[in-house]
Length: 611
Image (cartoon, rainbow, N blue to C red):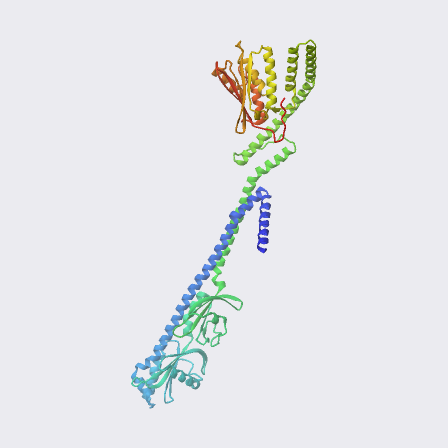
C-alpha cells in the first residue's frame, strides 16, 4: 500500500513538474534547459572534482605518512640496535671481564674500567651516562653532564632484576624522568647482563641512559613536514616520546588512538581537542614500541581547499558569464516569437493590417513569412466572402423572381394536359405529364443527392420524350442490379451524360442508335458505364475533352463537354477528388463514359422509395 501510494505521489509530482515546465514562456524554458544541460553539470563536475581532489590529497597524505612513519620507526630501531650492540661490546674485551670478575679494587682496575666506559659513552652523542655494576657491590659510571642519578641505589635494584630476567640479552627500559644534582631530563635505558665467556657465569651488568633528544633528532624534521605531532608509546602504552613533551611517561591505555591501533600499521581519522586529524601508526618488531603521527586535517586539505575555492570561483564566473550569454541568446531567439504572438493577438482582435518584419531566413523568419501569407490570405478570403455574400443576395433576389416561372409552367402544362384529355389526345397528355415530372425533378434545388432508382426513373422520362420527339430513333437499355438501385448518387448525374451522347454521338446519323447504362460494384465503389454506339472521337478531341474535365482547359470543343464537366465537378464536390468521370472513345466506334462513386447503401431498415 505504501509503495503504491509513494509511486502515485511521485507520478503526480512528475506530472506537476512537466505541466509547470510546459506552461512557462519560451525564454524561461531555454534558460531552464541551459541551466540543466550546461550550468548544473558544470557545477556538479567542479564540486565532484573538488571532492575527488580532496579525497586524493587525503589518501596520498595518509599513504605517504604511513610509509614515512614506518621508516622513522626503522631509524629508531636502528638507533636502539646500535645501543644493543654497544651493550655487548664489553663481552668481547677479556681484560674488562677479568677486572670486573675480580673483587680487587686496585687503582689499575678502576682506571681501566673508567677509561673503557668513558670511551663507550663517547660513541653516541645522546647517551648521557654509562653504569657498570659488578657482583661485589661496586659501581663504575661515566656521566657526560649533570652528575649521576639521584635515585641510583633504587634504580640499581630494578636494573639488576631486569638484567637477570633478560639473561644476557639486551633489555629496553621505557622513558623515565632522571633527576641529578643539577637538572633533570628524560631518558630511556638499555640494560644487559655481563657474563664470563669461560663459563658464562654472570659477573655484573651494564646500563646506558640515552636522552630522548636522540628520538627527537629523528622526528623533528618529519614533524616540520607534516605540521603535526608524533607520539611514541611502549608495549605497556606508556609514552616514550611526544613532540610537545607534555605526555612523556603518561599511560595512554584508555586513549582512542591506542584502541584503534590494533594492527602493525595503519591509519584512521580522529578528533582531538575539537580538531580533526589523520592518525597513522606503525609498530616496531624490535622494541614493540608504536609510533603515532597526528597530521592536522586542515593542513592536509589546505591546498585542496584553495584549489576547491579557486575552482568554485572560476566556475561561478564562467556560469555567470554563460548565464548572461544564455539570457541574451534566449531573448534574441524569443523576441521574434513574442512579436509574432503580439501580431496574432492583434489579428484575433480584428486588425488585419499587420505584418511581420522578416530579417532572416531561419525557422522564425520562415514562420513570420507564412504568418504574413496567412494574414494576406485571410484578407483575400474576407474580401471574397464579402463578394460572395453580395452575389448570394443577388442570386436570392433572382431566385425569388424565378420562383414565379416554374409554378406558372407547372400550371400551364397541367392546363394543356387537361385540355388534351378533353380532346381525347392521349399522346399530348402523356408528353405533357412526363415533361412536368422532369421539370419537378430538376427544379427542386433542396435535394443534392438521390437514389439510383430515382435517377434512372428521371432518365427514362427524358428518353421517353426524346423518342416521342424523334420517332423512337434511340434504343435505351439499362443493366443495373437490384441492390445498386438502393445506392446513393448525385442528382441529375446520368441525364446530362445521355443528353451529351444524343446531341454529339448521333448528330450525323439518320438511323439513331443505342445508349446503354450499366452499373456494377467494385469493392467499396459503385461504377456506372454510359456507352453509346455513335461516331466517337478522334485522339485530339478526346484529349481536349479530358483536359476540359480535369480543369486544364477552360473550354472543350465547341458545344461539347459543358454538362459533363458540371457532373464531374459536382461528384468531386460531394464525394472527394478520387471520384468523378472518365471518358473512353474511338472514332467510329462510340464513346463510354465511366462514373465512379462511393458505394453508399441505406442503413438496415431504411426504406428506399422507387418512383
